[in-house]
Length: 200
Image 1 (cartoon, rainbow, N blue to C red):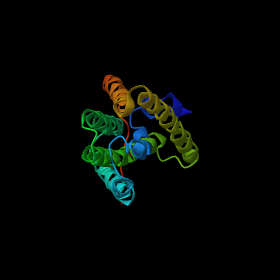
Image 2: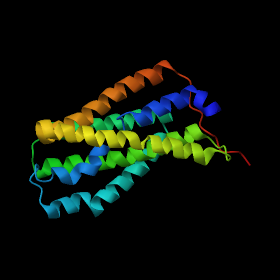
Image 3: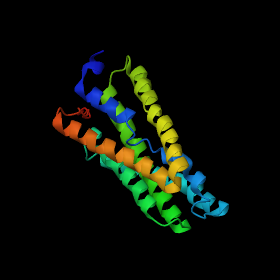
């Protein structure tokens, strides 16, 4: 139970349970195709095989970011970038080009968010071999909650205000969370320990 009492665990849990980095809109790309006048073939090209490659590239870039930034701050940074992408797409025209640029960028940053999340979970869990898998599963499960409620929130945004409403809700809530979480992490400067490789 030592992990539960640590400040870094509390802050990580707040990040995992917040809208930040949930990337729920990634599951709704095809739902906006008609609004952006994107044909089925165009959507398949942008979000099918191509989208998978872009997300994989984002995961690699996320690893580079996590190697240079403290893990909580890395999560906040890439989550904020994802939020800003949604807001930029909201401000753009309802055209296939906006759809392609917006969803591709969102997919790229989603990969970064996945990597940053996993890095923070592993950092909090540490190298304990006894209960590490259990603690990893608990934290991983907690991160599914914001995906579920953000899908609902995004849907309400669309119901009330159309595609721009969906993107505004997705990006706006995540950006507010980023500001609040950054203030909390900056205020509590207890560093997250990063395990160093043993020297032979």
